[in-house]
Length: 198
Ligand SMILES: [Mg+2]
Image (cartoon, rainbow, N blue to C red; front, side, top):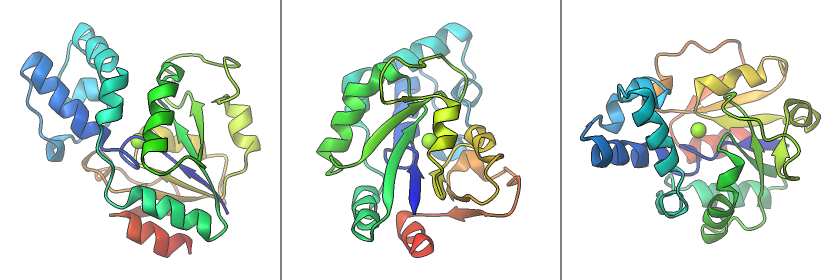
């Protein structure tokens, strides 16, 4: 199977990092469990200026490298590859975060996993900047069979792919969301994902 794995909050505990950062920068304390919406500006009630600063500082290399691994994530990805699946990390991070993102994967034993940058949320255009940048056409040509994703904002990418299995990594911000079709399964952890993919 060709498997798409999202980076933030599927492999790394990024939202917890942003929650700590919002507290540090602005004194705004919104614990992880209370992050009921995916949009960080809304989740933390930030002004436009604060939001821009949060995103900029949250994507600083040292900070990206400091994000904890989601329990069992890297071992599960290696196990999927041992079982013969082709795993690609498909991230909505800006391409400017390529180096620390690549380094984080390498440091977590995922040197053999490719990373692709796809503008999932319409934040920027990075078409053709690098061979790791995917546009939507390129994404659909990859014909993934299965996706591991936490963000409801990314689910629209899967609308034209009715056969694709979507394994939704359970997070507070996707719990109130009604899945758009059959084929979506909520997964509390990587052990569950391994069991479903087989
Ligand atoms: Mg994510």
